[in-house]
Amino acid sequence: MKISEIVNLLDAKVICGDDMLENDVFSACGSDMMSDVLAYVKDQAVLLTGLVNSQVIRTAEMMDMVCIVFVRSKQPSEEMIELARESGMAVLTTDLRLYEACGKLYVNGLIGNGRKSHE
Image (tube, rainbow, N blue to C red):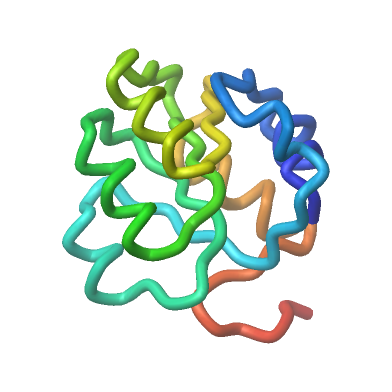
């Protein structure tokens, strides 16, 4: 799935990373607890979260994620946006709740946590 498809599916606004919209992503995860992301997430390209602080960007960078989607209309600070730019990440925001956003991506083919596909 291309990041531009995520933008469309979630009716998201692109905060930074306009140049990455045609990049492919193959998996995603959703969490508001960065400790869970660090402990349990492997090979995830997209992080969906409602947590808004700089630790989100740092965690995503450590996990080699390329896109962060802030849910529930959360808005990252300028400091967070700059960190994301420096790390080469796309940052999006959507009005959807975490559960809805993850569900929309999953039913449209974006898998999570090591699954090959869903039937």
